[in-house]
Image 1 (tube, one colour):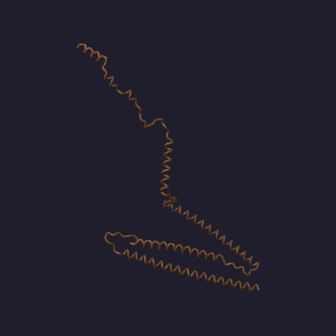
Image 2 (tube, rainbow, N blue to C red):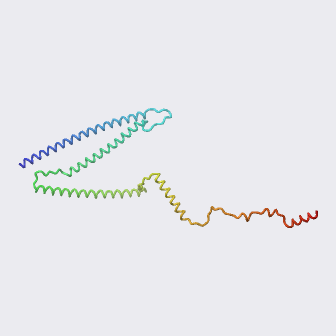
Image 3 (cartoon, rainbow, N blue to C red):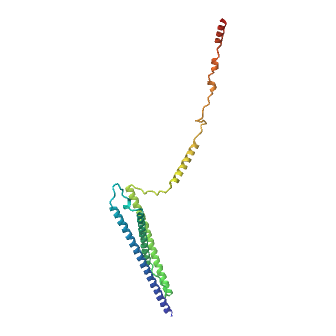
Length: 246
């Protein structure tokens, strides 16, 4: 009875696996048809844009008329062409990621075999566990070897780059930090004001004001015109003598 149950379970699992495989194939076929249709539409659109650009380039220009960029395309067509280029680049990146993912899955599928424990007794299970342990140990050793190899290659690439730069006289440019213009100017003005304030604080005072007005004693140098107008004693005596003679 147990053998019949095992056979029934194995047959049902095989049917499920076949259905799953069939479903995956249908999904892949449908996705492939959609990608082919999208690629065909994109190809037709690119050919149309290229043909229009060539026709615009061949079109004779008037005297004194300057040639426009991109073969004289209108802004709408320029925008559409830019969208097509960006879409094509995105599709190429998506296809590259998909290809790498498929390669990774294929590699893992080749390294990790499907595990089936149905109908195994204790001894067979223990044997399977030992086999898996040995397999995992071998894969870990292979992983370590690859890591060491990659690290050695990175070191060699770095050494060769340094040698090439020494021979050419070129050096690796440092990564510049992006700073906004307003922030940079504000920092510069703040630093300049701080340096000016510190410079003024370090100056010694002489106790004299360079721009102070000098106060002079004007009374000492002021001529006394009234004293000069007064007659002297000799002049007064001569004047009195003249009056007496008269």
